[in-house]
Length: 90
Image: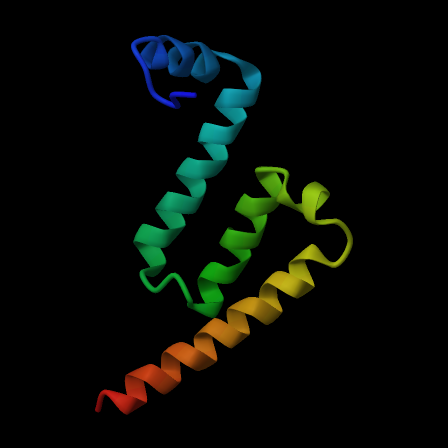
């Protein structure tokens, strides 16, 4: 199945006019704006934007209870690994 075809622009335009698409785009713009302002995507300051965005994209429902805590735990692991890699490169 082709993901993008000659109908894709029409499908995206229709989706963007729907309430669901407008909500998704509003959430995405807020996350992108926060990322641009904060800079580092692993920053603790950006974490709440990531979690809010993912919840808005319905990840909390699909990932069930404890989503935010599990996600924070994963981010902490990535931050630790990233700090280790940066220190190794010095």
